[in-house]
Length: 275
Image 1 (cartoon, rainbow, N blue to C red):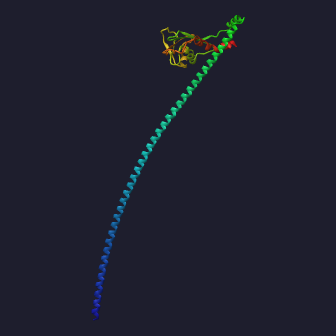
Image 2 (cartoon, rainbow, N blue to C red):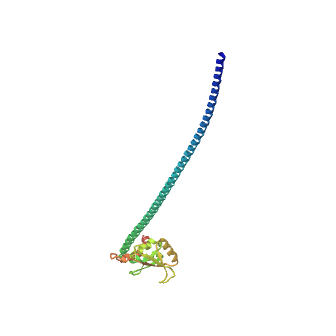
Image 3 (cartoon, rainbow, N blue to C red):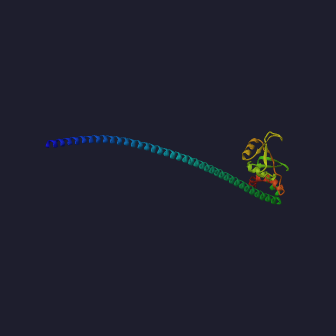
């Protein structure tokens, strides 16, 4: 009875051992399969993460490139705008500079013209005063001796004698005596009795040419200097006022106006002699 129980117990133990071995083997297989699956899933996850990282990096790079391109375009546009504004400002500054220089030059010319007119006016007043004194002295008993004494004074040399030819006017003349000099302002002032008001054209005849010879236009101080060079060695000059507007009805060419051409250029010298 005991042997039979012992045999049954041994058989049962053997069966349990075999079942345990089978179970352990099955668990080992399942564990190995599970490890393989986990490893494959991990690799797949790593590949997916890497792809997502690559995609993210690519998108970030594209966004950075687009941003840099937009910034460069905006910078270029701003540079062009600033350059254009700078050029406009430079043009405005240059225009203002030229305008100020022109205004300054015009103011200087106006001042010189005004000073010349004041000088001519003062000279005319002085010579009229001296003429009145001379006329008063003529009535004195010694007027003949005084006149002869005045004639004995040395006469000033003639710098240039001008003959003026103008349309619808009789020819006239004026002289410039030493120590006076010939300049454009003096010529323009002496031509006023002949209707010259700055709108006419003034020519001089070159030396060595007859009445049909070449005439040279005078437009300013430089042309007057060239005229004196061309006429060096002679003291006569023909001036022609052409394209002159018709004289105004309110303008009369009086004898006083005609004499001004000789008187104004002799004021300083005669006044010195009278003193």
